[in-house]
Amino acid sequence: MNILAMDTSNQLLGVAIVKDGVTLGEHVMHGHRDHSVRLLPAIEQLMKETKTTPADLDRIVVGQGPGSYTGVRISMATAKTMAWALGIDVIGVSSLEALAHQGELFSGYVCPFFDARRGQVYTALYASNSDSFEQTEEIVNPLFSDWLEQLREKGEKILFLSPDIEMYRSMIIEVLGEQAVIPESAIHYARPSVLAQIGAERKADDMHQIVPNYVRMTEAESNWLKQQEQQK
Image (cartoon, rainbow, N blue to C red):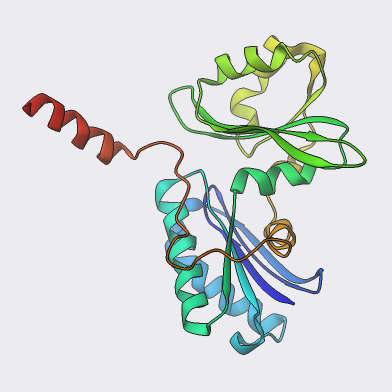
């Protein structure tokens, strides 16, 4: 099975081509402001390098978010358009789940998170051991300070993974102390090849039903609702 995976939901733009579980090529670039102009050229370049044609692809896997509203839309729209044009499956995978899987060799809890501004994060919780890797807490958008207090009550080691880890490192250590495990920087960035591996095992989504997972309303939607309430 030939899979094209892409994710532009956060700082990194990631593209990978995986064939039968083997990563043929992977491009990862930093700088979310350029995602809209860099994604298609990155896909084209990677397909040339791996000698993959559009007709070779069997499915497309895309990061569904949460993260940057615009970033999530860029890869989601690209993936759906390509899949529709090629007549192949498209599968959405949580960007948090893809990041969390990079800690699947850890024995304990794995907490991936993305900064959501104003002290809030997008996060979830996974339990990892030698036999399984499963989500134990759904994706939420809490104040990070409140989330850490909730995690502290578990009384177990927790592996934290995030491209925004340096923003919150001191807070994590202050609240959790030795409960917190923070690895080296490279593992804090989700690789699109991991996204592809997760999507390889998933059932295809309905082309017309798959949508970004923003978790919370956009600022424009929130402001519009406030205006409607004020006009009542």
